[in-house]
Length: 112
Image 1 (tube, rainbow, N blue to C red):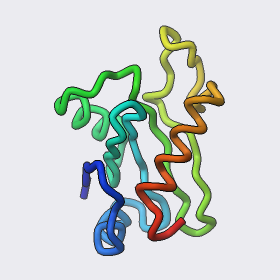
Image 2: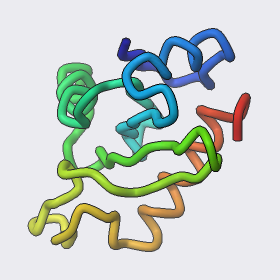
Image 3: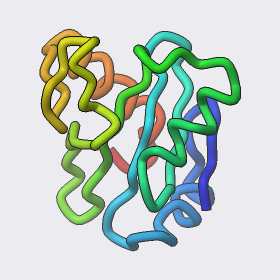
Image 4: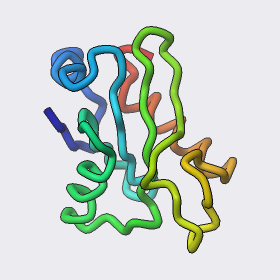
């Protein structure tokens, strides 16, 4: 189940988001408009939802949460964008990575 919102996820919603992988939740966050799409099988699904809601791709970054360790990662194929100075799966800009982490902690404050 994919849920897209601009407010923190509730415990009930987080339980639904676990449905795809059980121990990992994939996320795509619009770091400009502070909107998170989570729970997809592949990051491009969340990216597409946000683009359809008028997000700009340059502000969309992917990663996820390891539910066993509460670790946040910054890896996704959607992050490979040489035109935005990101040539790897990992978010390379420390500024963007910091915003992504801060927003992930906000959206998932019930578990992080």
